[in-house]
Length: 173
Image (tube, rainbow, N blue to C red; front, side, top):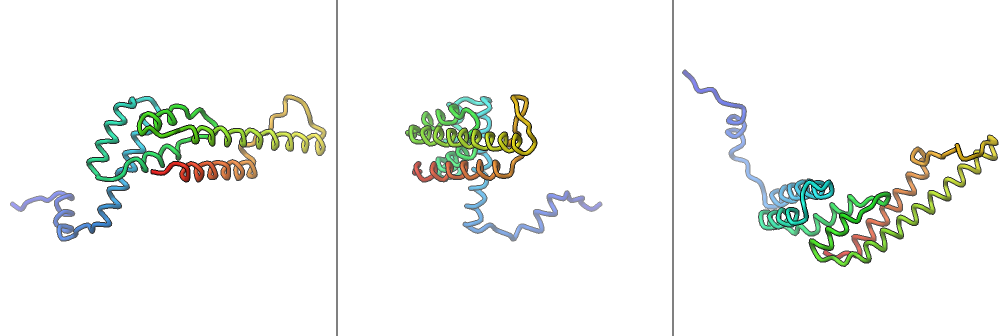
């Protein structure tokens, strides 16, 4: 009786002559490290792993893939920094893991958060004034919904992008 081949066997047989180039291998390794780093930072941020475990895993990635994991980690942390939340856990991690001087990071973070607060106050005041003038509506029961305002979203996006650019320029890896 004939041999029954699995789908995997057939695929392997048909692709055995294909090889990956050096650049392709490097790109694939970079993608794998980014995915793994994203998971590790997410676990750390969610307090599923401690700093010691994170450090161990990052060192393992560093030796396994022979890539500079510091930059990948830094990019992941900067992507996760939220100007509307407390970021102390992530900033502390950078300081404790790589001895980064986080004073400049904290200064820029505070500056950007103040900028957002000023923008929120200005836009809320403008909306309340507009409602009062056009519809004669006023009082403490009126709460503007800035999250549905396109101008708000655009301005917040600009502040966040400016913050990330400043951080990447300040921290040299």
